[in-house]
Image (cartoon, rainbow, N blue to C red; front, side, top):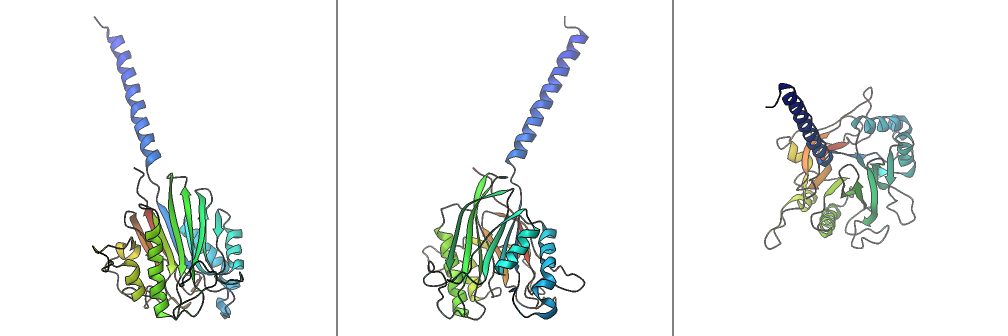
Length: 304
């Protein structure tokens, strides 16, 4: 006959064993859970512009605070000059910067990318120009007023143990045809990446929703047989399908939001979009840039 004392002893061992198994399951689940990725796209405004009270020196720390407050994991910046990137990097030392000038001589604006050093390893860095000769630095085509480019990285996410591509770009502000062709070029680049790649695009596209560039990037390709959907979706539209008014992202340093939403974050279709918004942070009525930064919180799919 088994004594009450021995039963209690066995029961205690079972409880401990079950607790161990349960805690192991929790730990395994935690280890494989995909941590969200916080993305920010921010046109900084050309740092040498004659903007008076809104000159770079008067707002550079507001730019830093805006980025810091959102706590992004990756940031795509446009109209970025070297000294602007250096100031942000000096203040936000947790980030590594990648970028180069759009001009052949190395002077001029970057489409820069900041990424959180503690989380990501840079596997590949690349650049191409929005032209008929994309591998030629400083090239421009169509009706583009200036050389335009895209910077891209392949990053290894140590937290989630997978890689993804981040592309940051800035379309021409004058050439309508150049913007449309640039969108097609970006889409072709995404489609050329290895099948199943996770891709995120940030940028100032100088074009609103339902424009030619927007359609070229996001609409179904009806010329293909069969017709194929775009490899990426507009994160803001996906999360805010009914938002039509007061979504402008160019604010002219005045906080105006009645214009077009020209700053976008796009993501691969299999990426889960948790949130997407427009950051209208101001400092005593002053705005850090003439564009509102735009944000997205994403969850990349688990590895099979």
